[in-house]
Image (cartoon, rainbow, N blue to C red; front, top):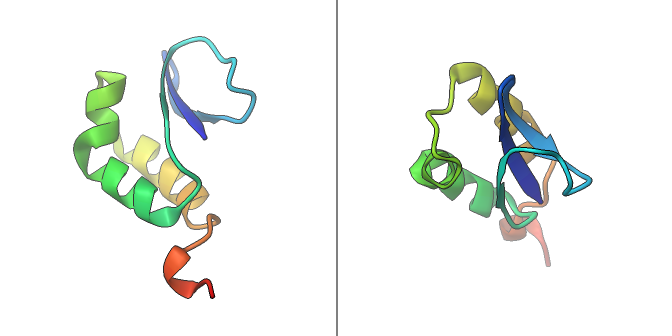
Length: 70
């Protein structure tokens, strides 16, 4: 899953083709949790705003949690 830094903020890019500096994350909550602790901001070379974080957390909450899988 690709996340992109744009002039308007950080967005999820389902097409993988949006312009801007991007980073790829696995489609698991644990990966996104680790990324939001600082690695994603470093990869995108930006500071994540509260709006950016809230947007990404909403996406993350809809992803599979491998701890609840069989």
